[in-house]
Image (tube, rainbow, N blue to C red; front, side, top):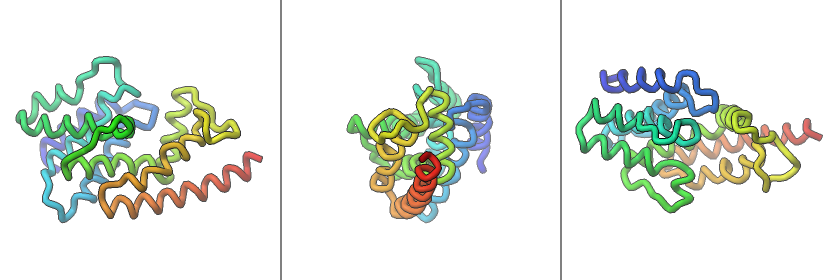
Length: 194
């Protein structure tokens, strides 16, 4: 791990170490680790991937105060303008809500980080994160519909679509396995719910 990545890691830990919505320091580390894995054997800028993965949620409106500039502040102090622009382009365009607005990621580095972030919304950790965020935002667990604003409806409205949105073959394969686990979980959930 380079000094820059260590510095970014400490910065994220300082700001997201006590976050309780699932968009926390541990999420950033998992996204970073997955992005590193997905980049193996690819011709990419490792620093851009590392920084985008680690810093991506610092200013997310779901958890940050309005007008937060933590990511740009860190980048302005630690990297050149080109790297800063590349990282911020990824951060500003990688979310699911950005995708729904028609924003696309145009670099391989961005596609890898986007895949890593989407993968962390799936599987056992994804289930835990969904319920953590739902509790924080007063979203019901389930209300007998997959069309409402409940946590269970979120599986159908967003999470189960993520495999088809993966940019890399490796991420798509991992996503499919994690979604199968989530479907097994829901089969048990519905049995117990009744």
